[in-house]
Length: 221
Image (cartoon, rainbow, N blue to C red; front, side):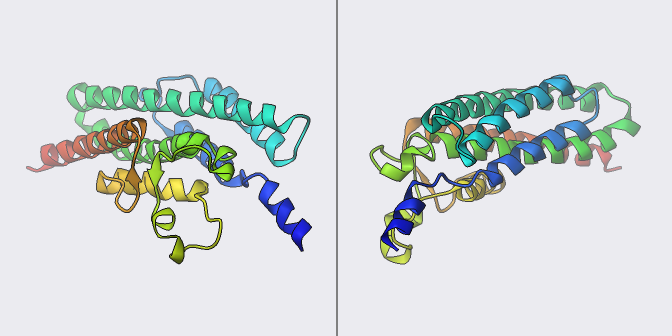
């Protein structure tokens, strides 16, 4: 039993959640209208493959796992950062469509694009939070690094299971709450970079909502 517990402690965090998030981002980018897409579709496929390969190498250890963990972190940070920038550019394009596009195309474009952009925003920031908090999923096991976010289970260990630490879906919940409530709700950002990232995610979500609201106001006779 002791050996089994030791193996569980050294086992990497499952990557199927982040992998599904990356695939979902690709699907959403594929359904965006052509004039809203900033990057070519093939670039998204290449970047996703570059992210999924080290994830698979971490899940099914191939060679030096520490090397693959570093590669995974670097590629995911580039992936998420690129899509945050891409989202901002997509929003700028949507503003142009709202201002200059013909009325019959504005409603369809805004409804499809705003939902895709909002979900992509949540998934991209969930990946960012997951990778930077306390140095990433591997570093969180040791507990040597200071956390960027304070989860309720860490603040009140008596209500959490022994050895609890946040997994990807905890950061997905954080990103969702930040995008919907424009604040991290029950999770407190501690570091400056955590505060800046949550502010940026909230701003993108708020701007997306403002664009949709502006279209709705214009549609009122």
